[in-house]
Image (cartoon, rainbow over all chains, first blue to last red; front, side, top):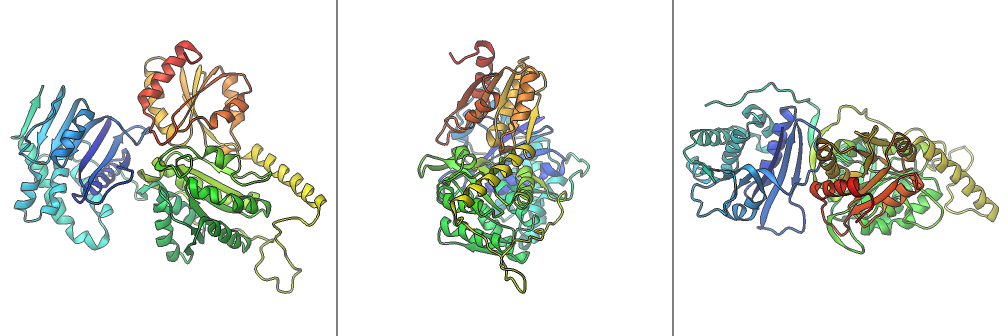
Length: 187
Length: 366
């Protein structure tokens, strides 16, 4: 198996945390994993993205040009990276209200209203964890247990009191995608 | 809700670590007590890691005012018998050339890390293997040689840094870890349990107060012409011993393969994808990865030629540097071509695959 995942959004949305958490979850699954942050002269308040490669074999390049899964936390990431998703791949978008998508062959498009769910939880900061729930449900590679184990590793000690809240947000995300009301196939 | 459940098979000691941090932890485990250096991207995470970790283990981190003073502080700590380290990227590593040749002349054990970026000159911070020649062929003046190791994963960055301190003490010589921006920035699981906490061995030559014993001297230059010739004779002997004992490599799918892709560090990682794909399609191709960049693992490479490899595709993220060592090693016994782009372009598995197919069909570049 080989998952090539690009997580993309704005700086400040917790993109790097998502990537590291997913990678930690993969370790708990006993899988090989690499995490690679967007690297270059970056700008405060700009875009952020990271690549996570998960496999049951030794992993070659940690840098990928094409992906099996795009986790887009904003519209700009959908516009920019849809062309980098392999045929048969999946694009998860964190907002139900996608105005447009650039299209592409054989792509699965899944909406998860992460911002709305997080707002309903009265904590917009956990939108990334709601999206994370949707992502692991779609990937079916990293279990909820493994992801939760990972939380204690990627969050600093003084934030460990927030683990239950983050876990709750992940579960909300899993449930939202499971309902599947927003999922549709595009040709 | 149906959530997939699995056994928790993770090893307790496996930690997600950035490549740069893995170098730092390897050094700490090896008993490194002193770090001196000046910041530069893309090695700053190592810097930060040492600044945080060294005080925890009773060591000293000091940001020097320049790379020059950093490497000379390393000289001081090494002369006092302590395990010590500095790190930089290409532009700063160049500045350490004088210090490196002085360390090698005075036979001071130290570990120097180069996390290379795109050059020439100041270049950019994008990843490249532009410092292969700088690391393996000197960087400083004079007839000296450093051991050079080229890791290709976070686990190996950790283990080889640890190993580097042993080698430095065994040969009383500086050892260079040649990493790059991709390896430094990426995060991978690292098992730290395998290596014991080490301490620097007792050294008879250290200058730390003579007490009632005879005076000890560490010289950076000889007093007579004859003495320098004698020194060089001894250095040559030492470098020959390194060449004999310290060749390290990894060979993958190489037995009986017609073609070998030769690559180190991050280029090896990218080429691995290409070779797996080409093999799936029936091409007789394997991979050869030098782990020691000096001494170059030429014995193993020659052995593979005897087993049938006749084409060597050298893949590097530069304009062609390691290819010179490959040509020297095989001495005309195989067809050697280079594929690579300098300046910070990240090679893709697809283009290396295309190159493998072209080389397989046509022989020489068309």
